[in-house]
Length: 333
Image (cartoon, rainbow, N blue to C red; front, top):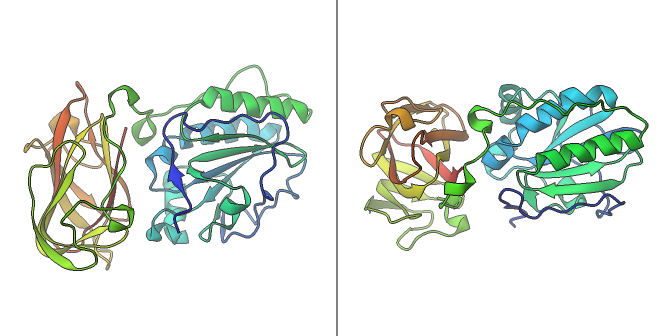
């Protein structure tokens, strides 16, 4: 069952500055905790709690993290507790070691709980990544916000709840440095939606489910993709079964990301990308060089394109020269 859907910037925004009832909002019932012993909302009574539902390979979640870090640092001494609830979209995100690594690389030092069975998700009646729930000092959900954006309003809610709790949040707002992968998206030029390569989210005609097939490639139109080489398309991902192969996609956005993993044995897997048949040069993303070469060293989101000039419609291709690559989903920004 698919418990979740992602929402774009400012989509689904809802404000509840009076008490708002979730089913039975709770933080217990999940799995392992990172950066903290297990917490409960009852045990946090007297604190203002910001609950963030996220998953580490989600670009929308990644772009929210700079704000969460800044709020935790600025308002923690005044009584704010940020709690990350990690609810996985893909199977590899259920692994606590991978989540710990993502938290460390993201400099997330606030408490995080793994919610692999979506127990906490259901208790909050949540429906999106990312999703923010603002709990007052009496344990009531007072505000909720789905998707990216509207960060100023979110911070104002934090400050108001702290004042209600008798705290002094200070005159200045938090200073947020959103750079790199966390840079706000260029929504004015995005014409490409999130695109899954596994058949569990639907697949183009001609894709064979769970069986090896040799694909001929092609010249995809805008927001279409194609495979070349021997691939096996599973529910969550397309896996390269032959010695070489590629994925091509026609897109328009400033940034192109691919959730990608190496072979099942974990060995790092080299790849190279092109834009309109050429190395990306100045339009290379954070995870590739100007020559288009990169290394899939773990299961995560890779930023492969960041157009520095005009945001144009482009043909992207990623090629592997060894079997085992697993490609999950393209996201944009």
